[in-house]
Every structure is written in structure tokens, then in C-alpha cells.
Picture 1: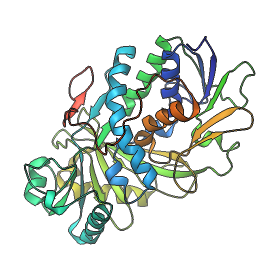
Picture 2: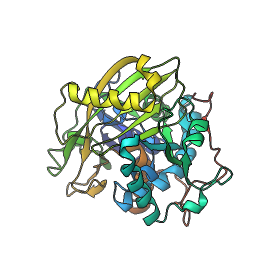
Picture 3: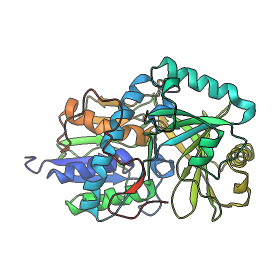
Picture 4: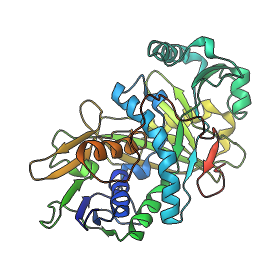
Length: 380
């Protein structure tokens, strides 16, 4: 039992909201302080495409990020049904994998991706084939078209990362707030918390880049995304486009809407999207599917990812008793559930999670390999 211990959380982004829900669910008195308005969220979690894509990130990220990403792939399907039961909000969770492709002029990028997968022991060319259920398969042009008929037929080959997933983050964050409130948590929006109140038994700093005064080593990495709508083009899973300068991805968000992102610029500039970035994103969009030339631009968005030097997350127990969770970079949805597990196992937070699975490198086969919505209709 928590004996009604009092918890103060700074930041109502992804980690702060997940922790508020899980701790309130376990009987803690939870207060959450957030500088932004509730109807105008400013966290990187709101802007993100919300992919859970450890295989795609394997060659770009630290091995720890990959390992924790595999753990998160198992945890999200456990968390989301509980969240629906607590909040009454169904959060769509796409689980039909993702595709990695490259323009014909950039086949060297796809070859390098294949080499990285093979050297990491993640892909064996012998596993390729229509009837094989290997986690990673190389696809020819015909099989790419079978999976995603709207793709540009000039994309001659690619990889299907079958176990990767994505979350409807625009539904997830309000659901987390609703669920936490159902257990008595209180949210104070438009209220920045710089000093934790003395009555708090547990102090959690989840402010992202807002914690920079306390974590001077933290830096912001600018990311830009484009939201579009297309009634004619149907793409059912994330598509990642490899390029020598950037790796962009298109993610379906339901209701014929897609998010394309994200640039990665070493800058803490929050000004609107540049013409150069807009052209690069629109060019990538056209490369993936020329029919998207008729899509309607809904908006461009910009945010800053909180990053540390090694692009790995950090859980830091500070001298004043504050536990800081930060540095998730562009891996928020990939890492957040695994970080909950770490906080429970290594820092003693009672979060009501099942023990971490051992000896598994991919999600259980009992999880349906399709787009699903826990408690609701499939997200088309």
C-alpha cells in the first residue's frame, strides 16, 4: 500500500502523464504541474509521430535503446487495455509493422541498412519469403505493392519490419490525464514548477527541455513535421524513406490523415518550418507516393526534442531528492514503457507493472499483427 504518500510531478508530457496514471492507480496522491495550457500542449510527445520502431532505429541508436524498445513493444499492448478501462478512451495502436524503402538513386542507403541488420544478427536473407513470419523480411517491388498499393512503383525493394508499431498520441495523452484523474490525480496547467513543495514524498521531474536549468547538459534538437490529409491515398503502416542526409517517415493517423517527419536539426530555434525543410519533406512525400501530390496540407509543426550527449535516456537521482527522467530524444514512445519498468525495478516506484519479460527479442505471437484499437474500431 502507498499509505496515501504524496507525489509531485513536474511536466505533463508522455513520461509525466504515464507516471501520474500509474501512481494514482496504485493509491498515491498525485499532483502534476505543467507550464503549458491543457488545450495547447507544448510537449514533444504531442508533436511526435509516436512510432515504436526499434528495428528501424537499430543502426542509428545505442544498443540500449534497441533493447528497451523491444521491451516497450511488449509493454504497450499490456498498458493500453488498462488505460481504456480506466479512462473510457480507446487509443489506437497500429501493429502491422513498418516498411523501409529508398529512392532508386539512394539504393546504397538501403544496402547499408541491410548490412547493419545482418551484422546485428537481426536479419538473415534466408528468412525472406511470403510464408515466413520472420521479424524482418526483404521485399521486392511486387511484395511492396501487395502490402501498400499506393506506394510509388519505382520503389524496387525494401524491408518489412513486422513487429514495429505506432500509437495515436493525440488520443493517448488526454486518455492518460483522464485515467489519472479518475484515481484522484490533480493537474495544474499553466503552472510551471521550479521548486518542489516540501510536503512531497516523491518528486519526479519530467519536464523535458524545461528541466535545462537543473540539467545544463541537456540540449534541444529541433524537429519539424508536416500533417496532410488525402481521401484518395490509403497507406496502412509507417513508411520510412532512407536518404543520405535524412531519414523521413510517413505515419497514418486515421481519418485519412498522415504525419510526415521529422527533420533533425541541432538547434533550439522554435521558429516556423523553413522553406528548405518544407521542400525536403514535400519531396519525400512525392517520392513515396506521387498521388500524394493532391493531398491537402493541414499544418506544419515544430518542437524540440530533449537530448543528452549520447542520445540515451537518463534517470537521475538528484541531491535534493528529485528523480529526474529526461533525454528521451526522438525515442519517447519507443522508450517510455521500458523506462516505467526501470523506475519500478531499480528505483522502487510502485507502478503496478508485471515483471519485465526475459529471454524474448520480439513481441509475443499472440499479439495480432494488424492495426488494432483497444476498446474501439480499427484505425484505418
